[in-house]
Image 1 (cartoon, helix red, strand yellow):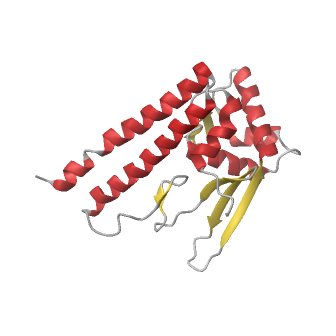
Image 2 (cartoon, rainbow, N blue to C red):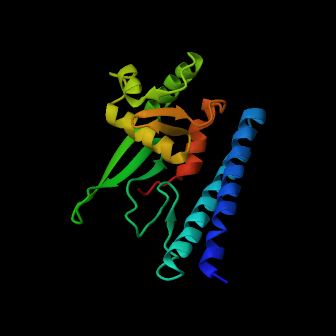
Image 3 (tube, rainbow, N blue to C red):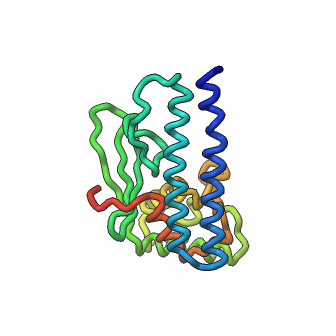
Length: 200
């Protein structure tokens, strides 16, 4: 029996279960407004993503090497495999931890306050109302010019993309993954997906 093939065959099942958990979480919010239950399911989905990555590491490394490295949910990478950029929620801010490409580069930290996030979400609501299904990052930058710095917009879009709320259609062009999901639940769900880290 090919052990690695057997391990690899587990990946679709783990991925399917993760997707089912996410879909159920979104359905609960949409149909009942129960954000607490939705957040708990999203947390389970995040754990399943971590498990899937560990299984994938075993399958691709032939069962050798360090397969127990802690997985960082906001990047999809193990901490030992260049975990940048990282995203988290710290207090009322969306935080991005990045690092330059050189080995000697130091970490840098960029933040966007919830006030900026709320303005982005308000723009998304307007885009929905107008029937716009796809939009450019530049559209948001232009619309919120003078209110939200462009670097914060790109930071928040990246965090939302990593968390699965939006997807990139092509370079610079995005769409919401589930346009029926109430935007009022985006902040609490983002906290669950990225994790709250007051120490970063």
